[in-house]
Image (cartoon, rainbow, N blue to C red; front, side, top):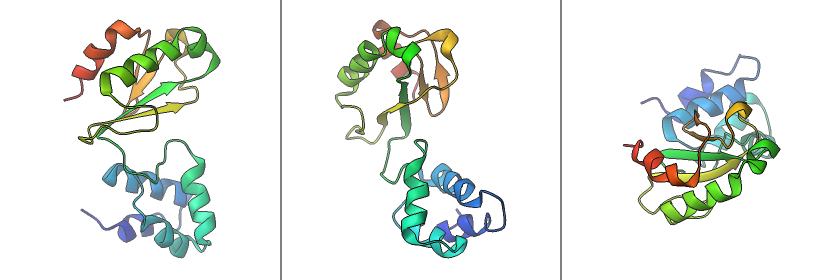
Length: 148
């Protein structure tokens, strides 16, 4: 596995390189470890505050450890109207965590997100960026069983 410095440095001369570098680090680690921010600041000639701002602005990036499976519930208006609140409650109950938390075994994290572009099948969740549409609370256990 490449080091965080090697990963970040490989994006040094690319437009939008810091964002691409963060995505690459996150693909390796599933989040942005603490040492990512000062390394990115140095490589891209930014202050640590600026590098941190980029890392925390985009909802798909995380500076906190997350589970192997990241469940993201769309909270846009169409999903909300279609019952997203009852669906997220079913996931919370099934996993024993609240939104923003990770299961004790590190397997699942539960997050909210804005529109994922699947409004034809609301409510929508993604698991590691794969969309699952037209869900209802009765399907939660079946969807979780797919995560092996």
